[in-house]
Image (cartoon, rainbow, N blue to C red):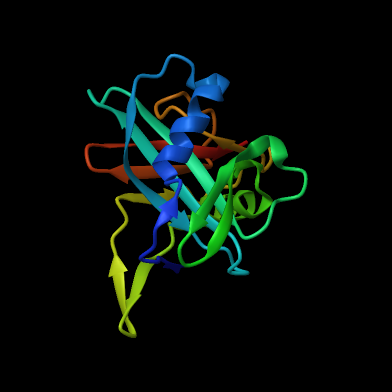
Length: 183
């Protein structure tokens, strides 16, 4: 279960992604994008936040998938995959990484795909009462092991061809598609 906080994040996730995206080779030529929602995974150790964010062009023709991980300390050896740092009003400084480079995300994604699992339940604690929130993006694994191994491949521009039956599929208002695969 993903505990969500009523918090201020500076810079915001949107600002971090907006500054990082133009430097990604796979993002060359993309139109202006706005967030449409996301999904989360659980870290069994409760240390790493994991979120997949979807952004879409104004005309709806392009949907981009940006999975991120949030850590309380830098991830050794992952400097090239650092999206940036934020100040979270509840959790303090967070190091934000492009999730495919994070072994915790890779393990969670592999487990969800191969087990036919789903994203984490999202909730807030308000006055001691748990209030669940429906994610804007629901995800489900295919329940199939990767045919060519368990190498994780994240689909960045939704709709790109995927040559695997071991996939994570997402559904959101106005769309659906494969978000990741094993192969």
